[in-house]
Length: 202
Image 1 (cartoon, rainbow, N blue to C red):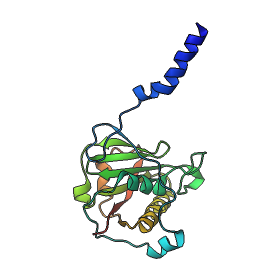
Image 2: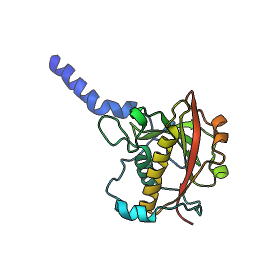
Image 3: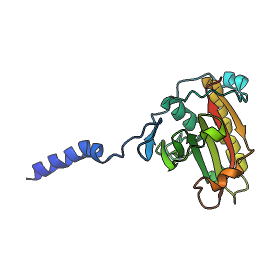
Image 4: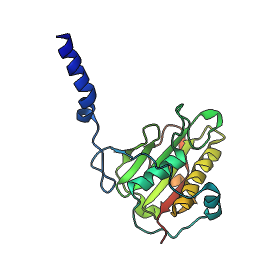
């Protein structure tokens, strides 16, 4: 009997997650609440010094959508977890990490869950037509933190360097950022400081 219980328990550990896992949503028209992103490709792109030489703002962004892999790489470069202790690719003062990165896609607005490297749908409304790109990273942070603007700047520079390394166009904007405060479901005490349009160059 004990052996039978052990076998059943082992089967549950191996197969059970497949039954209870949340269904993955497609980027083109999400039919679920989460998008589990592929693992970031940390071997792709140009060397750092070449990326620095190429980094620049480019407003000529095409309507062509980014692939799931490109979105995964972009988000990990911007605000991904790069150490077992949960610290990120961008620094924050005293490691407070009072940052929320939203991703505007044609399918809606998603919150980047960096520890799980996945997106969670928070707004079904598409903001991409008014923002002017197939993807926008929207950076919000705690208003009571004096270093919040610095944190946001570190994150969008990471994203900009990835774009230079991957041949993508991007531009950071603050005009209109405060208008998003009443549109997005921000954490209590947070505000939008900037947003970054990203896409393939036209």
